[in-house]
Image (cartoon, rainbow, N blue to C red; front, side, top):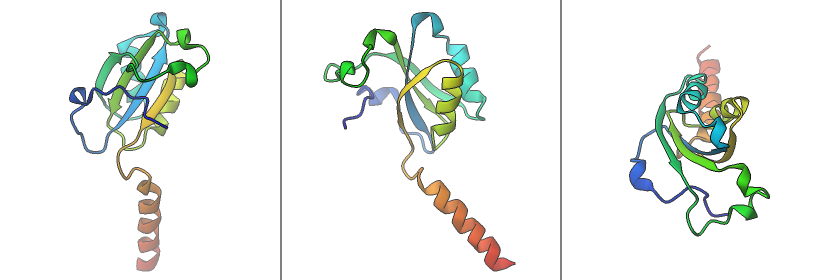
Length: 124
C-alpha cells in the first residue's frame, strides 16, 4: 500500500527517534494548542506541525468513504519512536489518525526490553 504522507520531505528534515502522524479533523476542531497538548500528554514533544493536503496521486475515497469528513489534514512529527501512544491521545482529543510512520527500528523496542530483562536475570 502506498504511503498516505504528502511528499514534502523538505518540511521534515531527518530527526532521530521521531515518528510522523497524518491526522484529519473538521475545521472547527483544528487547534494547534490542543494538538500540542495531546502530544505533550504522552511526554513527547511536537517537532513539526504542517497543515497539508493529499498529493494528487492519492485518492482518499479508496481509504475513507466520506472524504468531506476531514477538510483539515495535518502532518505532525513527534519525539517518540513509536506513535501508538500519541495516536491514542489524539483520538481521545477527537482527532482521527489517518496514517503513522514510526522511526526505523521502533519495532525493536520490545526486543530490547526483553534482552535487558534477560541480562538482569543472568546477573542475579
